[in-house]
Image (tube, rainbow over all chains, first blue to last red; front, top):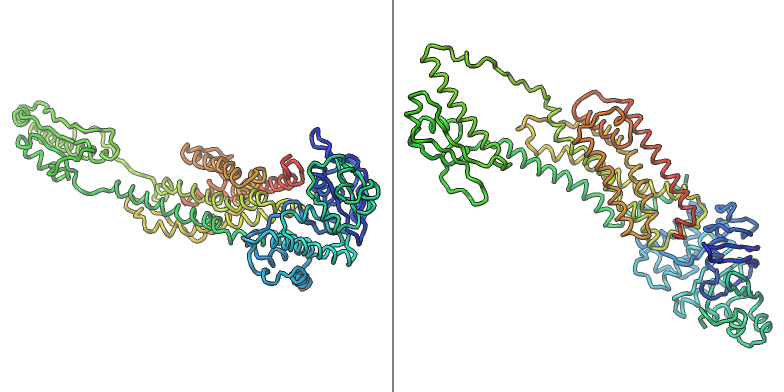
Length: 244
Length: 381
């Protein structure tokens, strides 16, 4: 369970988050939908403790990452905004590295690494260095990295950016699989189709605030529109920064 | 603790696969001593040039005995013409030589040359000395003929006794070699330090690393140890190579001897370890503040001037204050100097300087850890 309560954050004179409040329950996929610059990445960075909130709190399993970042981060797998792979390491070495940083060791570590490689169907890639990987292959490595320690919470920042149809499908399948296992999944996106196809709950963000919250159907009902895209535009009041 | 080892191992493996880092660490330690040895080789050859000095002698026929004397001193008539790039050295003997000598008047012999020409210095000096020794011979004859002891015109016999030991003479030349060894720890780990800090940021992996469940202290120490391993490796390589390469330089021809005992090399190596840690933390500090690899490189090349200025400054200004024994860098430098001169080693100074070096490195690492916790540094806000 990820809970965001009254979160505020400003950079110099720009108010990035303004008393943001929402929650992402276990076993559900929660989509954080908003135009570019709505404060999605800032919100996620506060959740995993890279940025300090000015007021309010963000709890992962009741732990505030601003107070106890190490314990909070043990609960989550992160697929960051920009991910750079270690191009001189093989996939297996990278996964082993991140697993070790999450306190895994010995046989258990090896089992987990093998498990995610299998889960993402990366056997043929696993002992290759990641230099020269395609965007889809890179996404798989980054996703495997976030899953290797079997986290109860998964946070993804625009995971489908730059992916082709096949890679997007793999990503969705993996997320649904994780939901089955009761993982709490929070992911940000500005792509409407994806949110509509995947999310159980949608939190629409604009200007650092929650503009609306609910299932995709509820949002459509709320605005009296039949398509989520129209509902969305109505909710945030403009169509700036939205990809269909 | 185990996190530090995890980071260290990963960064070390990563760096080992980076050809640029490995090459940078090796090339300085390898080509540097080589270059120095070649320079010394030529310097020594020039200093101990035993061949005849060839000059133009005008009016040879007027003073055959003088010419004969010059020849015994290795100063002879030049056969080939002077090249355009060299100023001729020309000795002119006047026609009146015989007559003036007979009537005991001073004979004016002209030596024409360019005294500022660095390369001709020894040749000109040899000609001067040869002419003067002939003059002294004539003086002696004259005094003897007049029934005087020639010693009356030599009231003082200045006896030069060089007390420079072979080792301390060598220290002069080896001083620059020592500076070189000290700097090797700054050079060798540099590329790795940039790669794992500014490089990590440039490749967009820094944010993910900082979001992992470990303290920034562990990250900084792991990275410091990885880059310091390269620095220490470079230092060790130059420590091993320098004695080997200097065996081929004929230092004994200018009355020098350099001996690197195993004890000395091991002690130097131990002294380099804290320095390598300090060098690495300094480099990490600078390059974590840079946005990308290029920017970090620029900053770090400025940073390199500090140890260079410190050690060369002390070396050439012949600075002598006791504080030098206790500070980072200069402390190790002084210890190296004592070792190579064969003097007693200031153990207290070595201990204190090693400790201050470690303390500086520790404080810097702490500071970098705090820096990585600040959103300003991480996201460049």
